Amino acid sequence: MNPSTTLVLHGVKLSGHVHRVELLLRMLGLPYDFVDASASVRASAEFRKRNPLAQIPVLEDGELVLCDSLGIMVYLCKRYAPETELLPDDPIGAAAVQRWFSLAAGEVTYGLANARAATLWNAPFDKRFAHAISERLLEFMEQHLANRTFLAAGHATLADLACYAYVAHAPEGGVSLEAYPAVQAWLARVEALPQFFPLPSALPAAA
Image (cartoon, rainbow, N blue to C red; front, side):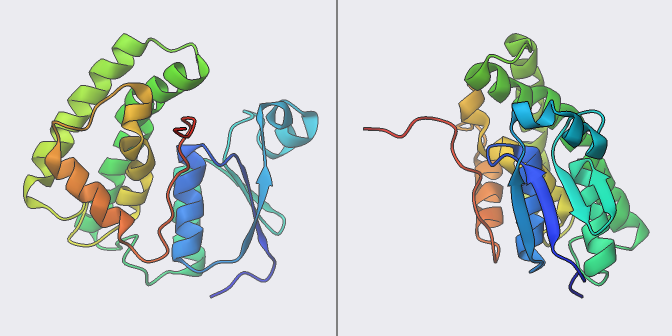
């Protein structure tokens, strides 16, 4: 099912929160316009009408305005792809995805994402604390993925899209992935999905 009007995604290309939504839009084959929402844009009164918290991503579907990347992902699947395996309907599958949503909003954000933001953009986060959370999360993921293909099911789900970007870019926050071969193998499987595209590197290109 295609939207009756073009979807509009407000964000910045280096945001993992935005990337997970844009990746889903592409995987579902939904046409959309991308509108840059830099820090100065997010501080404007016009943007705050869309999201008073001045956060990205923001998705517009006609007159409907949605905030929060995880909520947007659920909406897109329920609204435009209700039969997709990306969002299981059965109780166990739905609970498994929700567990990883909680980790995406918790440990992934307060660990990997905050470490990246503090390292690259001097965001006011405690890097030592963020690194400790990141290492605990990656150890858990390594054990979880030791005998699994994807995070929440035997196939890719929103759980994988929600967690992918910040795990893949952990080194940008000073968090090495070398000790986590199962995590690296999972990243490669996500990257092999149809319509996948990477989160751009925030590091300067090598000369």
